Image (cartoon, rainbow, N blue to C red; front, side):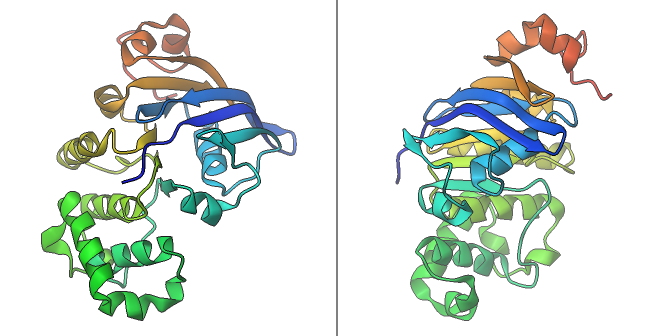
Length: 255
């Protein structure tokens, strides 16, 4: 298994015309930690992780993975270096089984194209690797179910399995608890606790119970700038964070 990777963002800036979504942001994510990114709507969280994953090119600044500058690399090249991302909205092949979705991820990470999905559905080694990952996220018994027929929480588990199938050194999660009820959220939190330490995790999440249960450190974005980074306890106690994002009782505000 690959070692967790450190992530360094240096003076990262992303502008869309007059709008600056990421504003001269510098941030260090330590190898193996769970680093949560929180902030109000419009803070630039999704734009930031799209740059980390290679889906958006920064207007200025650089991104380093374990000391290697990956700024010029597109998403597929970053994936091969160990960066995997899941999305706020599930992004699965709904007409394929759960097992085939994961087998495709294993196959793609080995350098083959997704157009060979028929081979992925028959390849014994790919099936075995995919089955192992499905078991890891608690979906072993759902392997042959079409992804589109899975419950929402199961689809989020499957999306996590697809990301893990690429053996990431850095896992970027965009609101993995989005749309979940309490039971599904608790299940996802338990899964993420199981994989913590096997890879570095950057977690964007509005569910503060999940953030404070999982994160080693938390960074708070407001208008594309990081106003604070620290332990969950430090963030709860930070007056500026309370004013910008958390209520007086330390709970997230919805403005």
